[in-house]
Length: 140
Image 1 (cartoon, rainbow, N blue to C red):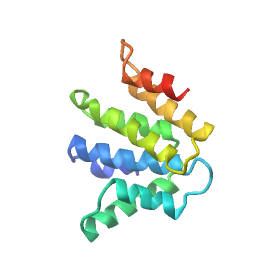
Image 2: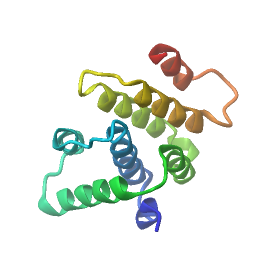
Image 3: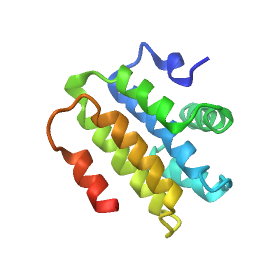
Image 4: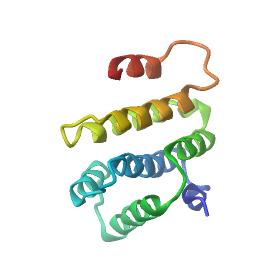
C-alpha cells in the first residue's frame, strides 16, 4: 500500500509532513547509506514530543526506506494530496530537502538531481516563473 494512503483523511499539513519525511528518507538514501545521523536529523526536524509520535515518524522512515518507488512517484502523490490553496507547503518540502542534502556538508550531484526532479513535479502545470525555478537556478 502507498505510504500516503494511510494518511489520506488527514489535514494538508499532516500530508505535507508525512510527504517530507518520505522524500527526505529517499534523499538520504541517495548515496546508498542511510545513517543513524541522517535519521536523527529527520527526527530533530520533526519534533517528536511524545513516544507515540516518535514511533509514527520512525514507522514512516522505515516504510520509506523499504519502498521501491522513486522520489518522483512520491512527489506526484504529495502534489495530488495537497490542496492547491496550500501550495506553500510544497515550498517547505523543497527547502527541507535542500537542508537534508546539505546536512552532511556535501551536496551530492545525485541529491541535486533528486531535488530537481521533485521541483519539476511540483511546478508542473504552473505557467509562471516561481520560487521553484529560482531554487533550481540557484542549486545548479
